[in-house]
Length: 103
Image (spheres, rainbow, N blue to C red):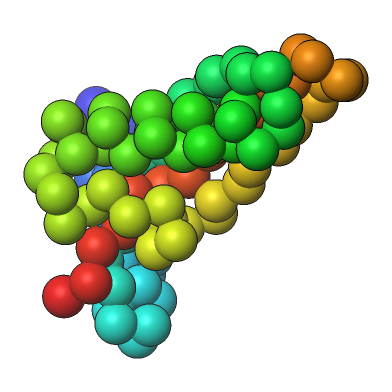
């Protein structure tokens, strides 16, 4: 029984250390990011640009709702991606990223 508890504690310590390493790396860049937490928003529009803008607006709105205005800048997001597909008259885009803020 003690062996299991010790193993579980060691596993928790390793997980905590990994999370702190992620935060330290973000601090080195002058920003604080949510570790292991992504936001994704999809939208569509008649043009690629309209779909991109709608996806980014949705990502920003949801992130601000959840964490506050400082976290809602997609340009600061970690692991960000904006992917689109479609053809003339019908486009859809998805914005994905880990919320980050300057500190």
